[in-house]
Image 1: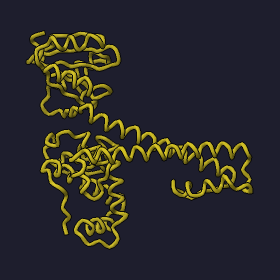
Image 2: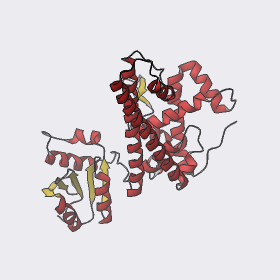
Image 3: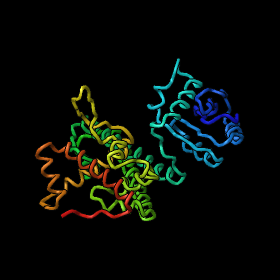
Image 4: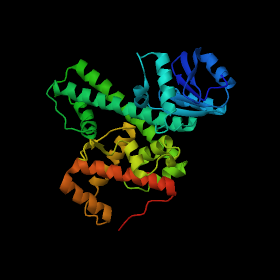
Length: 339
């Protein structure tokens, strides 16, 4: 046990597989432990590098291992799979994790604090409720169309007319269908109120976070993006430059270069799709309010829309904002409008 320099742990709910390697990469330990025995065993080890796959509970175990004096590496699953030999089982996974951790060019996921995870919990619960509300709205629209009542697209269009439809006794809705639709409408209103509470909670997080306040000076960066970036990126200097941060979010072109011929495709869509989605929606909000603004960025976006189309321009503006986010976090400055 004293020779272990790298320890790979395959995380699970109750049973954990461990593989330890010495400084030469030779396996000196194979062990399977229960959940209760894992931390006491790790506490007996000399300080070493403990690696685990990025999955549920990884940040909790990383914090526990850090508190015991160990260095921790959380690695994405896609970087571990190429190192697996033989069939997929817990022992082989733990060995692959250990092998990947010993490679100097493998990206490690930053370890989040409990408070940062709490902020992301707020984002995830809100995101799930928004999806649930969209599902209910689509169901309500579909049910009404069965009785010949067609509503225009959009959430606000439906919310503006649904009460009149329920109160109209001449529209041919049977009493049972009217009751079911009213129940569905009450659930949608409850979801609206809950989402509003979550939005207020995000606004409170911004008021307590100086980094989020700085990021919100960027046009197209609101409370969702600012708080999500602050929680997901504890140290921006983990990225070599702003383009690497942009690539981490999946906002750079997919590259297929061979024989000196460069081919660029669509964006890679790597990283956190929620954060990428928020950045793109923020960019679309900026584009919707361009009007006749004559600052440098507005003119660039307007020309890009004409030359490359609306959707490509939205992704390009989102990528630009991602680079600005990294720059402001590193330099600790507010955004300055370029006239």
